[in-house]
Amino acid sequence: MRALQSEYMHWAKTQTPVTYHLASSEVPHFRLDRFPIDIADLDLTGASHYRYPPLREAIARKCGVDPGRVVMADGTSMANMLAMAALIEPGDEVLVEQPAYEPLLAAARFLGADIRAFTRQGPAFALDIHAIEQSIHAKTRLILATNLHNPTGNLADIETLRALAGLGVPVLIDEVYLDAAGQPTAHLLGDNIVATSSLTKVYGLSGLRCGWILAAPALAEKMWRLNELFGVAQAHADERLSCLALSRLPQIAAEAHAHLPRNRALANTFFATRHELEAAPMVHNVTAFPRLLSGDPDRLHDLLRSQYDTSIVPGRFFGASDHFRIGIGGPTEIVEEGLARLGLALDALA
Image (cartoon, rainbow, N blue to C red; front, side, top):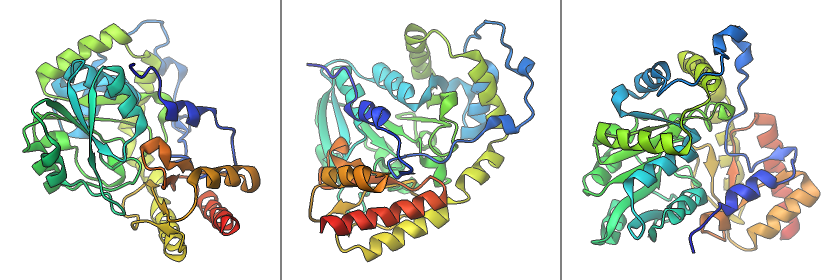
């Protein structure tokens, strides 16, 4: 039976709030009303605009591509769905990294894909081209990956991605975290690499739902047609606000990313002092995926919520039940205290 939901997304959206939200996977929300905006700037006429050219061109400039390669979508999640719907048919084999971001798997299953896995080996979880090549079969129609890797935060560098493009199989890469590393999109390496991203995770603008797909022009047109089937057009006020955000993206990024080096250092120190955990050092990450060497991450999560006002994400949602994901994108004081409380919970379980 096809998957009709994302178990992880439903879980994440229905958890009760806590103060020390290490389960968060993004930087703090950025208030666009800090910029001078007149209500008339949003063009609230009730009209929608076909493939709104100013936003398409702004995304193209940001990514260094021709506008004919840009498809707009409601966030990275819809971008991934549109891209996969254009790339695969029911029964096609899709080769997916493991651990994996569960909503990507759920979308592929919904589209009728036959899922096969290639393993990213911990604790670094690097993208292993040999492992991918060995996993490709005659039926493989798509390779599905994330960069930075979700949940671990590992960065695949340009040479690794060039080798991936050279395997000759279409590749879809979710790059929603990539701007935290300052690396160009992998779509520039070849037309067989389709990339998706948005202004959500590393800019604090998830409410805009400004997502996009980068694809070769003919494939991009196919995705536009699917977008018209699913949603007809994007909300125009959001398109206007997204153009405003893109025009000021360096300023937004400077603020959104300023605290990340400090937070990564705090997390690295924490991991190094906890004998219960195995974790690679954070370099570009917004998320980390430590392994709990003894014990149950679900039990740890329950204890953190019930007694320490803190949250994590159990690794079972990513196919690794002995791990858990934490996010370090929040305010430094929240991350620092959240890590301290995580330490207390680990002590209590021991």
